[in-house]
Image (tube, rainbow, N blue to C red):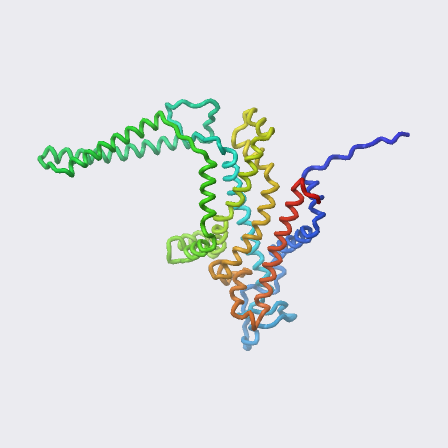
Length: 403
């Protein structure tokens, strides 16, 4: 009997990527390390032997400070007698939360701005058109219709306010001239008010008949270039100091909104402020290439809206580099948080983080080295694991890879 050849079921892109990822030994080990770290952070209240802020009580308090590793305290105790292992476990919650939240927020902001910049590059967008202006063929006012109505209201509201003020001032000057108070100041004031009325008339006519276009890629790209010129670490230190100052306006606002967790959210916001730029540049480059391909052109010819083309067709096809970049950004965010906390500008005690544990241990590092080795090792192994994980994902999602 002749053998019947059966075609194997084709595998999806993600199944092929997982098969390629498993061949990357370092990435697989890193994946298990990351899973273990996440489980440790989630189960901290149950696996930590002591409270991270508990200090010893009793008669012989001095004997409980700076205890070396022992059965009772596997990683020893710090200068206040707190269990180092418990603080390491609880510190994982803060460090991983900062890393994941900052990376996700940066990815969302960077993806949104990057896809807008790439999609509208070289295609000036009409963001304002007067009610009597000719609407070009193919112009779809939604979702900018509300912006157009709001812009008209704002424009004519400002014109009415300035015109009313100018009319009142002109009336006062005319009364002064008719009353015999002739002066050069009155004449100059009238001249200035006349020019103001002429400018208001020109702006009003432009508001009715004019229209404005802008290349969003130019605006967003120049803003990204500006962000890249800012020295990140000095500005991070300044912003952190301002937001932590409870005497200042920004510090009081942060404390009133976030309460005891203010320092955590402040660090996340500061990291996101600079973290989105790399993602935006990456997505912009990918979208510039994808928007000219057949599937994007077909969707546009079928009448799909710009928002649908961007976020339904282009972004999913740029997920591979986005996932890799987000994975690497987690490690970078953890390093940034640790550096700020180490310098004393990050999350403050008694909240336990690996960075402020290092900061507290630096003056005791030669006498009690276990205080610095434990948090330093955790930072090292966590960032290394995320970097190897990102490296494995890059190779697995790249079709040109030899894995």
